[in-house]
Image (cartoon, rainbow, N blue to C red; front, top):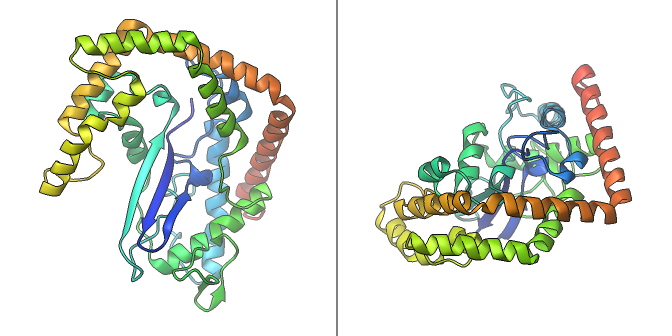
Length: 321
């Protein structure tokens, strides 16, 4: 099962929208775990958690060397096997920066599933799992520029009067391990996971499962056509905005009590109606079909990933790429 995968959306005044991540985009660093109750066909083409840990450790090892060359000791005390998440742009003179982190993982692929998790975190269980593992670290703007290559003014990135590598120290490390810079788009497996999911959702059996779940929710006093509607919670937004403006919530991304109650009902209805077993089986079949149509591409993708692991192991053993 893949670990929590955050998509960090950075909104900065006058800077538009930037999509960041670690893998770059995964934290905790993880691919897939072979076998297991919830293993899916596409997992076979991703790195295992242990392999991704190796790649991540090598990336941060190389990044630390690069940062030292640029005159920073910022990573001197960072354990490459337990590094911080992908650097987030700090607030600077360019304006206020609002960072929103949306996280997904296999445990929440079909929405909230466990009533206890729902009672504690509402629809934000994946975010809670991410925060439980991510090492918090605040970067200065010069450190952020050196790590990512994203300059404060949009011009060529420099640190201590030295040019910063394209993509920053982390980008340079990624090129040395994988032969390419940080990905700005989802990789092949992520794309195919989305494609297979959309295909599965068009199956009449999935739609029947949605209707059965919806009927259960009506019995609990909720009116949503699908679990996605419940998770989006358009009917809760006014309450959330009011609480946020009144200071009734410590953080904007903490769930309200209404959200928690809704999520608990959602998870219980999924269990009572057999929803999860139905949609998971449809998803697996859709993944098998998509694999058959992209086998050569997937085999090449897996070979590249395995090559990256070998390079990462060499980096960790020798300290050089």
